[in-house]
Amino acid sequence: MYRRVALIGGGAASAALLQALVERAATQPATLHLDWYADTDQPGRGVAYGIDSPRLLLNVRAASMGMFSGKPQAFLDFARERDPGIAGTDFLPRRLYGDYLQAELARALALAPARGIDVRLRPLPAAAVVPEADGVTVLCGDEQTHADAALLALGTLPPRPLPFVAAEALAQGRYVVDPWAFLARPASGHPPPRRVLVLGLGLTAVDVILELAARWPQTQFIALSRHGHLPEAHRAQAAAPVDDGGALFEALHEAPQVRRWMRQLREAVAASGDWRAVIDGLRPHLQTLWQALPPEERARFLRHARWAWERVRHRMPPQVAEAVAALEGEGRLECLRGRVRAVTAAGDALRVQLSAPAENLRTLEGDLVIQATGLNTDLRQDIGHPLLRQMALNGHLLPDPLGLGVQAEADGRLRHAGGTWPQIYTIGGLLRGTLWESTAMPEIRQHARVLAERILAA
Ligand SMILES: Cc1cc2nc3c(=O)[nH]c(=O)nc-3n(C[C@H](O)[C@H](O)[C@H](O)COP(=O)(O)OP(=O)(O)OC[C@H]3O[C@@H](n4cnc5c(N)ncnc54)[C@H](O)[C@@H]3O)c2cc1C
Image (tube, rainbow, N blue to C red; front, side, top):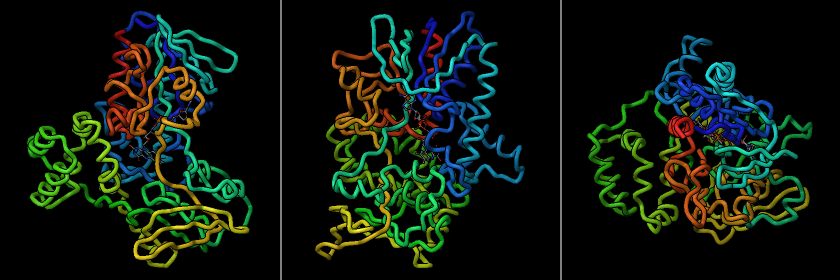
């Protein structure tokens, strides 16, 4: 059995792993030392559940957001203790989910000693993980600790400025690279901007716009993306996912080609009359389907189908869709289609050049430009994460060739040039290249259970 394991990361995936280890360690005779490296002394909430706002909602219904595999209703039970009127189909505030994660973590930490798990929290980033024949050495501050295995639950990479943003625009301080850090900051005391340009039109952009529109009631927002479409919305009432006995999944799995998949999906939607139910019916199979897709087809998917897929797969809660429509109706939000070519400084403002359909080049000015282009998982260049940079430079990990995190086995073991590390695992966003669906709680809790069993059995 492993005697000492390093858990690295301070978000929901670490919380789920710790909880899964404590739950399953009940029968362990020996002590497992768990060194938990989190770059905060309040781990658990991570990036997604850390901002204290009632407007930022979960995009998964309450009944599916439990953090334990086998008990998806656990979050709903927690929420109902506070408000018995809450329904399983509700989309609740993410800060409430953060409260739930922290309550569960506190419970797991209290229970850990009785289950033979000795948890030592280091509220500092782990700077390096060095693989060795009999485990790993973790460097953190001026300490080096040997462990039998390492679990990397690092989330995704810090956002990088888009390549067309001029250096002087970045230096001016009106270009926001990390929207979550910006929203988490206390109000600056400066007068609110008159016009904000948002680059991106996915769920991140929607969150940013709604939150800032409430904080700055006079501000106008223009959001830009290549396709100019907002995400689709969930229905208020959940419809059951299509249950065709696995027929669509099998048809897709048999012929893993993106063009055929698109056609088969269109046919399935036409037959069912409810595209949401078709997409939801496929959700449990998405990891298997992605793994069946050959590399050139994955690249084709990213080029041609990704944006359309993300729009229908990652949907807005209905009340969010209504709030966005109200902003559009009031003339405070405009969504534009076009490809951003340059962001430059223009006196006190920023100028965005856009090649829009049927126009040669359009120029927009804003007092603030916010980059909201989604999660960064690209380790192929300029890695802004010290631990991952160190591992990549030393050849201890391999970037996914399509920029979707690291190369890994389906169980999360990292690959290196000579094979697979038996003792270094990852979970969450860095596994997108291997699993595609790896970032949301339903997948994370499932993977946490598998990893906990593996660690305890090793
Ligand atoms: C804004 C947002 C909203 C979301 N909403 C939902 C939702 O409604 N439903 C859903 O199912 N999923 C949602 N997700 C998906 C989300 O990714 C997962 O639910 C989950 O929060 C991921 O947790 P994580 O621990 O993998 O990553 P993170 O939350 O990113 O946590 C990783 C943590 O590790 C820390 N860290 C990184 N490097 C080191 C190091 N070297 N040493 C120590 N610590 C380190 C980071 O600082 C960070 O705190 C959302 C994601 C985002 C970003």
